Image (cartoon, rainbow, N blue to C red; front, side, top):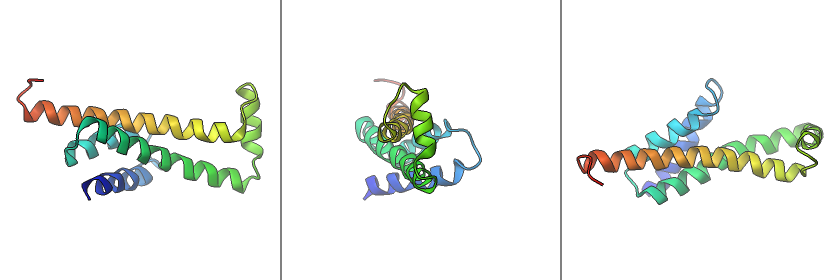
Amino acid sequence: MKHFLQFLVILGLGWFTQQYTPWWTLAIIGALAAFTFHKRRWTSFLIGLLGGSILWFIPAYLADIENNGLLLQKISLLFGGLSPNMLLLLTALIAGLTTGLGAWVGSAGRYLISNNGTV
């Protein structure tokens, strides 16, 4: 249940803050969620990876549908002819890694504080 709550916190906070803040705030949101819910580092990383990926993939996919794929086709030319689907996956991967690494740091920080700085 805590896994799902951490996932929902990442999605909820990420959805509202991404409208007003830079893209890298996903790392801070992942760190805060992992620090709050106190999961193992790998578990927090995977939850952050999934949350951040979904958070960026769905709006990118919906924007692609709205403009009939024209924007992704033009951007794919800038990246050496990558397919539009690969660009969507690359977008999701970047967001997922950013959030996942932030969650890893938050979980590690919680571990260090709870163990008085001893690893």
